[in-house]
Amino acid sequence: MKGIVFTEFLELVEDKFGLEMVDRIISSSDLKSNGIYTSIGTYSFSEMLQLLQHLSANTGISIDDLLLVYAEHFFSVIETSYPGLLATYKDPIEMLSSIENHIHIEVRKIYPDAELPIFIVENKTENSLTMIYKSSRAMHHFGLGLMNKTFQHFNSSAKIVLEKIKSDGTEVRFLITKN
Image 1 (cartoon, rainbow, N blue to C red):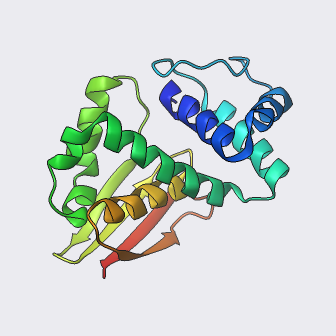
Image 2 (cartoon, rainbow, N blue to C red):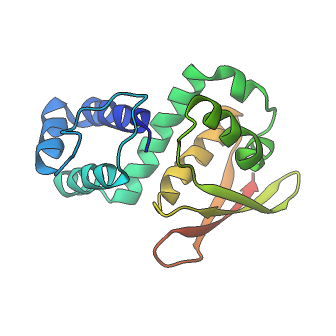
């Protein structure tokens, strides 16, 4: 998992819960990196999972809800760092349907060894999109948060229903209907 995901996560934790919480979740975890991350480094997903689990235990907020909030924060990083990528699109449905065939290709240009989820478009109309998410990490709520912020970015809204295809969350269907 790319370091930017860790550095931005810890920045969000510090902003929302304070530096003491960052120290607490790092010291509670068994991290090969010792909690020292660079944005261009690559780290084990197990480290992110431990940080999320300890943050959840310390705050009483579910991991899914933490991922949702984190994704919304991470979208602002994308807006600031890669405005040209977002400017390519005029509509949230168009952008979301291009994750696999454009956005992830651009991400791989910057981070060639990034391990990204797979998004398969099942059905697309002007106002709706059905996509399958596949990832061994089961971070579908991170994807959901990014989708929510995509609609906000375009001054739009949508109803997004998440259906688990596999009970462990490694395969999920997103049913998106633009309001």
